[in-house]
Every structure is written in C-alpha cells, then in structure tokens.
Image (cartoon, rainbow, N blue to C red):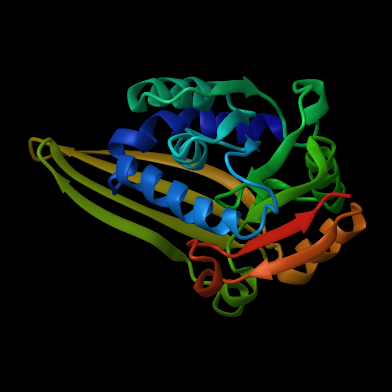
Length: 258
C-alpha cells in the first residue's frame, strides 16, 4: 500500500495550492472554521486542543485549525506533501509542527498523545484491506489521550456505489495566468468494492494546454464497514454525522477513546 500511495501524493501534492481549480487559501480557512465549530460540540473539553492530523496532505485542515489557535501536529506518509504543507504554514504565519508518518504505524514516529486525532478528505479509503483499516484505526487510538476524540471524514460511499458515476469532482477556474480545469475519472471494480481514481489537471498558459495525470486505487468503505472497524478497535460513542448536521463537506465519523 505505502509505495504507490506515497508516489501519488509526492507527485500531486505540489500541484494543489496553485494549480487546482479552486481558491485553496480560502478553502483552508473555510474547512478549519467548519471543523472548529463541529469539534467545539464534540471534544468535551475547552479549546484550544492538542490535535494530530495524521493524513494532512498539504495541510488544508491542519493549517485551518492552527490558524484558530489549536496546537497542531501534522503528519503524512508523503515527504513532498509535508514539505509543501510546511511552506504553506509559513506563508499563513501559523506555528505548528510536522512529521512524516504512516497512519498505520503512528507510534513509530510520534511519542505525544493528543486531545483529537483527525484524518480527513477520504484518506482512510487508501486502506484497501480489512487488516489495513484495522491497523490504521488502532494506530490512531494509541495517539489519543484518554477520552480523546477520533474524527474521520470520507466520501458517502453508500450513495456513490448505487450509481457508480465515472466522471467526478470537476472544477474550472479562470485565473490571471490561465485557466485551470480539474476532474476525476473513476474506474469501478466489477464487485464495486474498489475503484481506480484518475485525477486530471489541465493547465492553460497563453492558449497552450498542459495535461497532468495522477492515478491511485481507493476502497469503497460503506458506513457499516467504518463503524464496525472503529468499534472493533475499542472506541466508544461511535457516531456518523451527515454534512447537513456537521457543517462539513463530507460525512464524519466520531468516536471516543477510553
């Protein structure tokens, strides 16, 4: 699992901030604010919190939460993404720490424990096997304080698997330096339990178009799959939150460490 995923994000990570089809800086602030409001009702202790983002990518959620005063440590298995996130945090002027770590073995790289551990943006779907999913959730539990909160966000696969759409996540953004066109093509496995994501980034400069392609495989994690795996890891109060109730753009699963 590790080498192909690392390569995918090492290549894709540096493209996000300036070349994807949206205002990433604004997205950082928006997602940070959404998660902060949600966590305020679920952490069970006063802010600011110590928080580990164990699949931070280039820092979208981690930087957004650090901007709001939380003590954030951000890790990812992609060294290039971590360096990109580190530079972005400097640009935003936030004080936070970073490290390279596989979320299936966080204890190998992190000694501290935290009030909150998060993994967002569907990162958990990289766990293609049951044993990978179990290892990831157990690893996250070891980094939580007693009564700490785990937060996972992922795609709503119960809805997606019904239609198996192939063309997804399209964005067009006109910028002073040229148009950016971003979309994904999903190739579904015959059994509907995994799919291969083809991420396309089209960058226009002076009427010329450069196309970049990035590819990875993800697992279709249904609601029962996730809830059962979290309960089996020994968490309590395992709860599913739809975007309408959470205010966050993806479904969220929360659970309490005892």
